[in-house]
Amino acid sequence: MGRVGYALPTRRAAKCLEFLKTWKDAGIPNADILRAMTINGYRVSETEKICGPIKAGFFADMIACPAICSTTSRR
Image 1 (tube, rainbow, N blue to C red):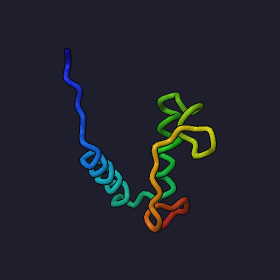
Image 2 (cartoon, helix red, strand yellow):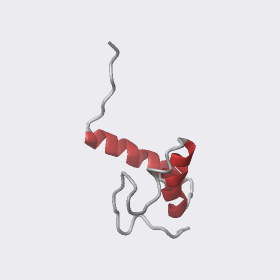
Image 3 (cartoon, helix red, strand yellow):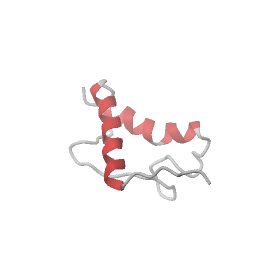
Image 4 (cartoon, helix red, strand yellow):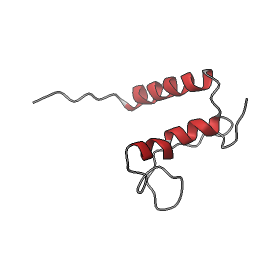
């Protein structure tokens, strides 16, 4: 039986934030990052009918970060 990799939630969260920081450091606007991490990623995986859009009835893994995340571009 093969091994399954698992990262503790704190390590996983740190890796995710590290990954997102590379996008911010590249100057990608918050709204574009949000789209890439939600609907666009689900379109690529052909699951956008159940996941991705930020609206009622859809599944999503998200956190709210006041003053960090925004649906408007900041440059």
